[in-house]
Image (cartoon, rainbow, N blue to C red; front, side, top):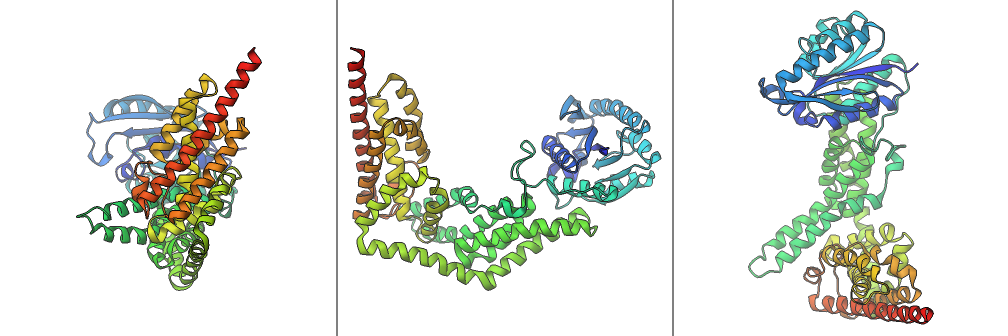
Length: 523
C-alpha cells in the first residue's frame, strides 16, 4: 500500500522569505514530490501569514490551507488569532486520523509543536511515525516530544524544490522506497520537462530564454551613438561580457530544474566563462546544471542537511564547471565562435548581394521547417556577441518580420474576404511593435500559393538590399527602433521598406484575383 503523509506547518519566519510567502508554490512542490515517490497526501494543515512569523501580531492577516483529497486550498481567512483557532480544529481531526492509523509519515514546515500542531504531533510521537522537516527551533521541540525524526534541516539557502526533495528523499530512504525527484517544469505542470538531466539539455531553449539579454545589449549600443552619451560604449562592452553569464545561468536552471540554487551555480560558471564567449557560457551552464543535480542528490544520500546540500551543489558545481571553461574549454569555444563569424564575413566579402538574396530566399523555408531556432538564431546571437547586431539578424527583420507585416497590412487595407481584416490587424500590430510573431502570416500564405510565392520573392528582394548595403541589424524590437540598432540606419530602413512594400503588393494582387474569381463564380 502507498505510504500516507501529512504536511503540517506555517509560512514561517526565515522560511517566509524563502518561499513561505507563496503557499501555493510551497505546498504544490511538496505534493508533487510526494506523488512522484508513489506516496499519497492524507492531510494538510498550513497557516500562511502575510508577514514573517518573526514579526507577526494577533491581528496580522493570515489564512488556513488544507487538503480536500485532490488539491491544497485556502479554506479560511482572517486574523492570525482567528486562523490559529480554526487550525486547532484541523489539528484535532488530523490527530484522530493518526490515532486511527490513517497516516504513516509527517513532513513539518516551520511547524508549531506547542500550539497549532500540538495534538497531531503528540499523536505522531505516540505512534512513532517517521517525520522530517525544516525549521530549527520547531524541529528541536518536535524531537523533544519524542517524534521519530529521520531527517532535519534549517531553511537558509534552500528553495521550495530542494526542501521538498530533501523531505521526500528522507522518508523514501527510511521506508526503502525508490524515489526519482520530479525536476523541471512547475507545480502546475508536474509532468513537464521530466526524464533524465541529459534530456533537458536544449541549446535552442537556452538561447530563446536568453534573447532579452541580447536585446538589452543592443539597446545600450543605441544609447552609445547618441551625442553626449558616448560613455555608454563602456556599458555596451560590459553587456557583451555579461552575455556568457546570462546564458550560463539560464542553461544551469533549465538543465537542473532546481531554480535558485542552479541560477547561482550558473552565475558562478558564467563569470568564469566570460573568456569563452557565448559558446563557453552555454557549455559551462549545461555542465553546471548537470553537476547541481548530481551533487544535490549525492549530498542527500550522504545525509547532509538541506542547507549544506544546497551550498555544496550550488557553489561547488558552479566553481567546477566554471574552472573547466576557464582553464580548458574556453579557448576552444572562442575559436569556434570566431570560425563561424569568419565564414559569414568571408562570404559577405566575396559577394554580399548574392549572400543577402540567398539568405532572404531561404529564411521562410527555414522557419517553416523548424530550422530557425536550432540553426539560424544561434548564428545571429554569435554575431551579436561581438557587435550588437548581425547580418542574419537584418535578414530576419527584413525577410521575415517586414514581409509578414506587408502581408498583414494588405489584408487590412484590401482583404480577400471581410473576416481577413479582423484576423490580420492583431498580427500587423505585433509585427510592427514587437518585431516578432511572423507566424501570423501563415494562414494567408498557406491559403494562397501566390501569397506564399510573393513572401519568398519579397524576402529575397529585401535580402538583396541588405546585401547591397552590407548592413547588420536585429529583429525582436519595434520596427521604428530597428534601424537605430543597425550598422547603417538608412540602408536598413530602405531594405525594410522595400520588402514590406513588395509583400504588400503581392498580397493585394493575390486578393484582387481571388475577389474577381469569387464574383465570377457568384454570377
